[in-house]
Length: 454
Image (cartoon, rainbow, N blue to C red; front, side, top):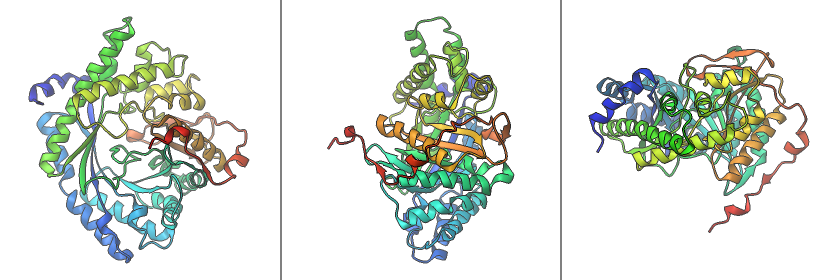
């Protein structure tokens, strides 16, 4: 049983170590909103979201006040819109109208973000999928709270290289459309391999078609808590180190479990999963990179970084799954550059490169996340980076993702400021050698041999 004593035990973590529940995300199925009339689709979507989510923000705030646990974000995820709008949307502009409806509904209920402006195209694209993808630059430029994701590969299907090529172009177009805001639109656009159906974190959240009509998913986060715990075991063996991380992850997850159960009861919506991910913020002391340094590295990016991150990721999972029967989403350690002050410092000091970050993604939760690159980077180069990251996910049977931000008008050595949880980032150099001929081949990279398990 979870009791108030366990919450009291975490007070110090909340007050001094940046422990928070990063998000309560209400997943909503929009499959019953499908109609051949676009106006009717938009009306159905708006009515369903504003009805089901009307109490989400107030409930989150009540739980915060009752238990003195910060809940940083209240969010919504919806069924991938390529599926919902397929019958009514005949062109990209039609899908943009749905994006505006999502934005309007999100503002009405007061959430921070709404995710699910998405397409799942790991094996091929329908006309609706392609129209949605081509609408993304306009949709993100004309909305404030909408987040978009595209799944272009999986271990079971391989990598859709036509979609990879297209996404390189879409990221560039999104950067251009939002260049007056330092290409901020790209911070709300993620390209996935093996995207999970129950991820509560933005910008990649969507409500999978295997989910119930509505579901509550909670993401917890406590890099500062883990770092503080590790400070007490400096110089100890790896066995002691691992046990400390596991025990800390257990306590953090129990807090998330309490919040999730309480939100589920108050909203009368089934509890889905707890996502254990250590998600950093720009706040000092809330950094995954600082944990790696506490483990024994001078800087994130030093030799040993990938091993340290693998250890951290695994122990977080082991501790978390003992605290909750329903662990899902991404669950591990995030390494977004702009959102982690330690990562930013490592980049500025020359310890961390794009190539080292790619190596680290083999063992962590997501992938190349919130990385600012020169605005003149070619679309094919972006597609090549996406293809590399998708291959890591496909071969290793894990989720990987890319959230690159080509900042129009800026180059290596400059800095871009996003604000809030998105932080700021130094512009990182990108390999200048061409991959044009590779990206332009077209078609699909087949699934790996170990995908055939039936």
